[in-house]
Image 1 (cartoon, rainbow, N blue to C red):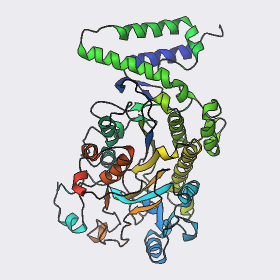
Image 2 (spheres, one colour; image 1 turned 180 degrees about the vertical axis):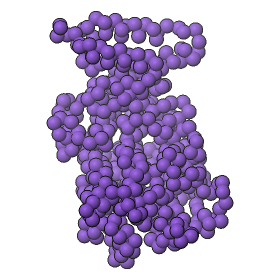
Image 3 (spheres, rainbow, N blue to C red; image 1 turned 120 degrees about the vertical axis):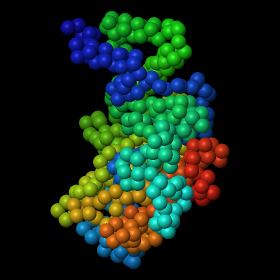
Image 4 (spheres, rainbow, N blue to C red; image 1 turned 90 degrees about the horizontal axis):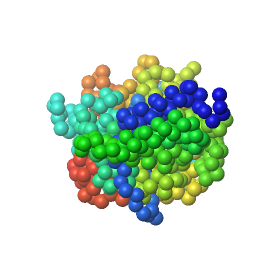
Length: 480
């Protein structure tokens, strides 16, 4: 076989990619057709990026951020029992009486430097809600979010910013449209509701090292005549007038998709050590890199994001929004191994989160972009304070989140719940339901409003992006 000619599997792979692109499908993990890219604009100096990291399954916030003062740690240890983290293992947050899970040790330097904050007891709310209002609320009450404790519904409520779980738009996507960002939300973690809007779908990119789109990274690929001919044929097809507005709109989207894939492909495909322009990013991710590849799923997503942020002029636009995710947090069992909560499933998940977030923040610091980038977590819901009989935890409501960035005001924000089972913050009333499922004291809308305000949204734009925000007055956490 001639050395310039791809093998038969490579030809089949290209044909699948080209056909999928023509149909607006996924290419190597990439969604291209529904981009609706705006015209290129002049590069602005006031660049900012928001990076959402969604922890799917419901992260156990009660073991992510733990009180360290004697009274509350005693209450925590008494209820958590075998799931309780040893007090001596907790990583103290400077200036507070709280500690992080020891699996998050990679984040400690960033918290110590004032680049890390925790948002306490946040979750979907239509309006402020007390235990008395909860107890008196009837079925279908507007005060109570629909389908509480359901994974799919609560994920959508978080992603939609407190709107209905059947809403088609996410608060990231709505904000991107309202702020007229050049690109839609850029997802390195698959399709999610967070980046969807009425006008645009998220731009979904594959892992580092994967090809993106019909224009392959290696220019030698086009030296094989059939590939060059197919490329020319696709260009010709989508340059024609279809005779219908819908057909022409689809053709324009596809032409835009070809353009953006060609523009971003070299950035997307780069692996550690391959491009000198990403040397600082490569060094930051070195602790979680092995054999020229970032070793973890979330690490690869945030490595991809870091490269794109460093290449912000190529990506285009002075406001960019990113989405990453990690699954597996539905820890109904296995949070303890051989009697040790530091070795269970939750500890392993948090280690991946902490290592990846720390590498990403190092990259932002080392490239001088830390003040322009804010990273934040979301998750379905918190988990029950009281463990279940399987050495795990069950579905709850309010939860704690982590925010990182050079513009972050370090510390803890919001109200930590009263740890009394059946107390003022626990939805439980009957004896069988006293599990510690906390009524949130900060709404998703308030959390998102702080982030979007930093991003540059006006009050009118915040009101349009976050439908329930008006119900909370001006009360918002000031973590950034």
